[in-house]
Amino acid sequence: IIYGSDTETAFLIFKEKGLWKTDQNTSIDFHNTYRWTLDRNSGVLSLEHLRLGLSDPVFLFHLAPASPTALTSVDSHSCGDDTYYGQLFYESHFLRLHWRIIGPHKNEDIHYYYT
Image (tube, rainbow, N blue to C red; front, side, top):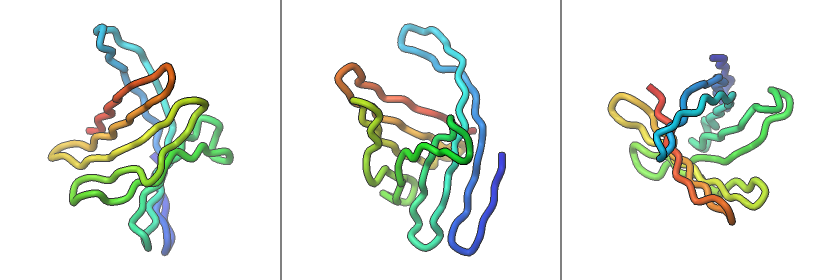
């Protein structure tokens, strides 16, 4: 985990790895590096994927407050023919990131649990 801040923003970069569990009860290893950036003035949190490195981030979306315990994507993220939406939920002992992916060949709900 790498973090930093100034008067206007705070960011967190972290590498994650885990196991995808499919509906067919198979498991697939994965890893990602993300940068979360909080704009202190607007309260908006942005999410970027760093698969191409720190100097070439892939912007995913801004998340804005939707309730006292949830943030939701302001706009969608397009990747080819697929459209991605996100929601981040604060739950009692973890954070849950929910991805909704819609496209001509995709119709997926993915839940990440950060404990």
